[in-house]
Image (cartoon, rainbow, N blue to C red; front, side, top):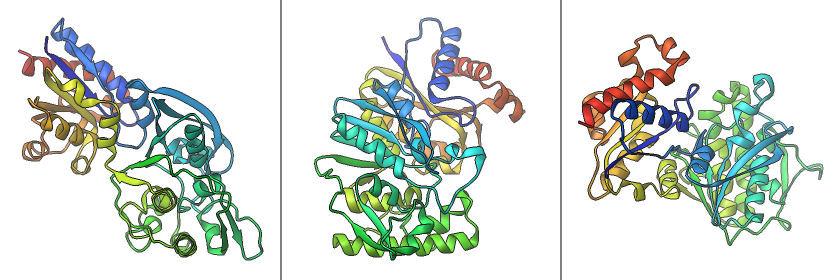
Amino acid sequence: MSHVVIAPDKFKGTLSAREVAAHVAAGLAAARPGTETVAIPVADGGDGTVDAAVAAGYRRVELGVRGPVGRSVTAAFGLLDGSAVIEVAQACGLALLPDDELAPLTATTRGVGELLTAAVRMGAKKVVLGLGGTATTDGGAGLVQALGARLLGDDDRDLPGGGGALTRLAQLHLARLRDLSGVELLLASDVDNPLLGPKGAAAVYGPQKGASPEDVAVLEAGLAKWADVCEAALGRTARDLPGAGAAGGLGFAAQLFLGARMRPGIELLLEMTAFADHLDGARLVITGEGSLDAQSLYGKAPVGVARAAAAHDPAAPVIAVSGVSSLSPDQLRAAGIAAAYALTDIEPDVAACRANPGPILERLAARIAGDWLG
């Protein structure tokens, strides 16, 4: 019997990807009883990446790590058959800052290194780091410190965490750096910014993390010093690699020190959740996210799902659900999406949609059933 694959990302701020899938399935079942559905919540490497992995069968592992401002936080990663999925925002995300107090100069990625160490100790030989949503601009210095490196200032003392302190970096000691040469590390991100310059981590993303123009100058100088010292120590460069500026420069450290490779986030997550296996016999694929807009066209989850479905033989039609949509029919078709359905098609008041999205989404799914399931 043919089935419907439901593979949405979250509706940010209202519904998790799992909840979106459940409401769509409920709406389809109400309109067309007996419809077989397969729910595959997805993510593009940012918020919700671990949840998507767990929904696909990964075991959730929780532990306490150092948060962005040094306080212990509880973070989780997914683990399955020697593969781990880590969401860096769980260790150094903006949402972890106390009382929304931004810390652009002092936030650290140290907790990410602690998550990575724990995953490797538990047998992970392949690790996906989902980048995005970080409070940090430390160039991945905290990550490297957590793996055993020492960063010393010109007073021979260990530097405190954060990108602001990197301007005082004088020595980098790597004798105790953990050897992860046997681990395949993949960075799930669509950010291709270099580490430095007008398109770099500090200039582009620093202000989003609370950095003033003066702070941006300090962070840029610190990242430049960090790159100079690291590249001299390792005898190779990484500052201009695509994605070096991702996650406040964590992409730089991961590529330089750990040999990490950048991959589009949604592609990686679809591979790790065996998405293609569920397309055999699918009559329809339903994807989506909270807002379908121009940004969705640049590697976001719905377009990634559509591309994967188009590559399957035979291809199944793909439609999208969202809270709001500003994409034209031509833009949707170019992205491989046959049609889009938004909550605002039923309830024009966006505030009402955000307050009670589940029932509206079920009504929308019933409309989809009428249009696509005969």
